[in-house]
Length: 122
Image 1 (tube, helix red, strand yellow):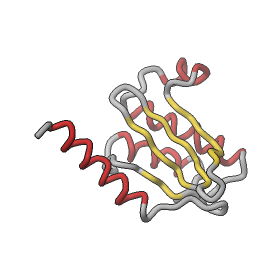
Image 2 (tube, rainbow, N blue to C red):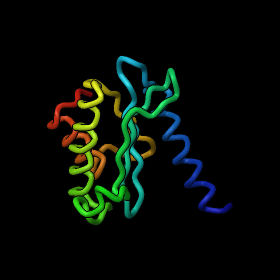
Image 3 (cartoon, rainbow, N blue to C red):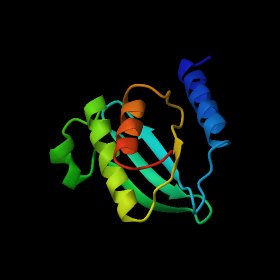
């Protein structure tokens, strides 16, 4: 069997396992994390209306100079601070972290810690 099919299936199952427990509401939207090898991104999503309220990624042109390379913990921490500031400006204090198929360590943990320090409550 093709190993990519197996690995992609495992990743998909992990993401569904996390997402079945984490739902974004108007009072507590979902903070979804997207991690790739060279970039990092996140969105604050209200699942009841299906709208993205706040987003940030290491590929944004206005953030690219500040963040630099997006595939390390430092970039994830800077992005956590930025998305927390944007969310607080939009009136969002509480979120539910959706780590997707990623483990809670490394870049994801650095992102979450920085967002907490900047004022978001998980």
